[in-house]
Image 1 (cartoon, one colour):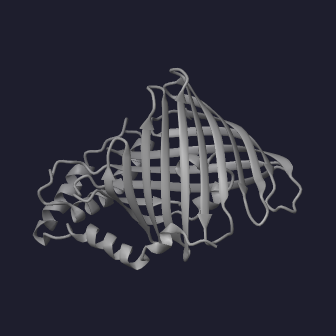
Image 2: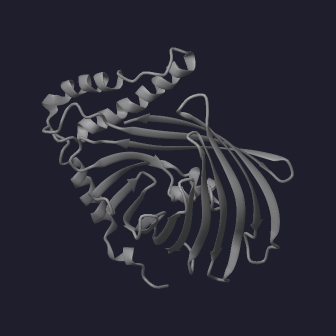
Image 3: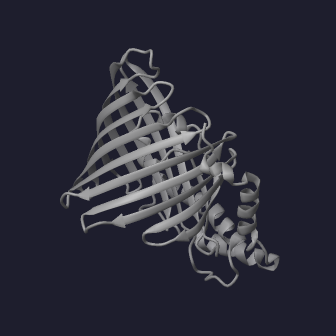
Length: 326
């Protein structure tokens, strides 16, 4: 098959280059004690909404997530940076209970974390996530397989502006991903966003192209259409995914999304692997950091070209807990 663009880049050299860029600020051992004290003062300021046991438990976990972030922030920071800047963290813990046709229950847990290090001159984030694009995880079938593969890594922002950004992700899997994203606001209500990735994962090179079209229909409705094409040395041809989602704002604490997607392959035989339609209701309840979702859907699945396509319904029940320190 044709050589991929990423193949022209020396994998080991890029890892060494990324490591060098991240370690330039790992100095000043004489400030270690002061930074450790600063870590405690920053994180201990977090408080819950009440003194109840569940708010205290949430605050305790937020502090536990905050402290590693501040430690890494101090480790990679420029000593001239403002010592009062708080290291932001975001941890999303999703617990999915899925009822499929035939009365079969499955449980999937997913953790996505981003530890932002604002004092680091190189703009380094500590991340824990899968390889699937987050916007498509719930819409395109098969995302549960990616969730199981979430792993620890570092994200390095080479450039970042209002319209464009270029990042490098290095993970322990091991894998490395170069991602370029450009956002173009065509009008006040219509926006396009292009994403290009070059990656090496499981000893195979690959590329992924994604283009989104977003149209704000009114204050309460947003329409998004996404198109994704993936090439990899793991398989011949390419894999494609297309989705159309209509978001509806209900209240400040609730929303609906009407979802449809189609995924398929081009070789050895071109065919559609799955077609999906569904509705998702999301509600913030009891606490600002607690959410639930109910998402019924129907899939017309055909894993192999020789299989017979059949329709199967499913219902997802999700409980999500967010730990956010900004």
